[in-house]
Length: 166
Ligand code: ROI
Image 1 (cartoon, rainbow, N blue to C red):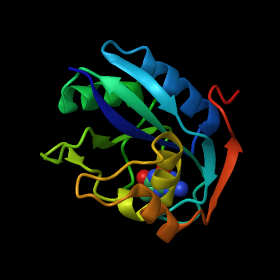
Image 2: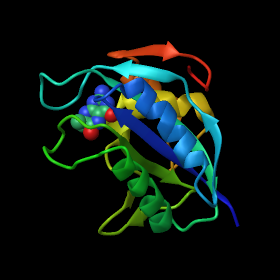
Image 3: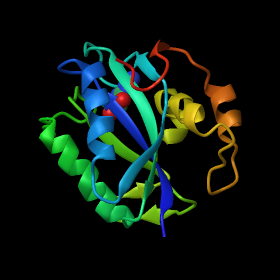
Image 4: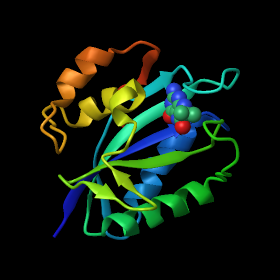
């Protein structure tokens, strides 16, 4: 049975806007994964160590018959194909693909925590998520819209409206 999951995309190296557009196409071309909706494209102030370039961020809704860890494998293979090197914690990256929600599931395993453990404090995740899922509730019943109203859009700029962005 297909389930809907939400994937957050981020990049601040090597043409971040194009990295994200290619990543959406790569996700959609994976077996057993279909991109059902794509957010607007945002430029965002970096959270974490200062002195790194601005980020581009977006969120996609995917329908998938893969189990959560198999979806994670698929996304990590795309990150690696984009030249992702894991170095500095919270440092710059060519492509970050995070599973933020998977159906209504709560998952705590060594490799994967869903809902994503920091999504509630990151407007660069919540605001694009709202584009694709305006009525969404988290598994604990919290309304996404309420979280977005609390965090606001500070540091975020919409740079493209409709996918394909370019
Ligand atoms: N900051 C922004 N604005 N966007 C990101 O995607 C992002 N990703 C990260 C850290 C380094 C925490 N900062 C970020 O992993």
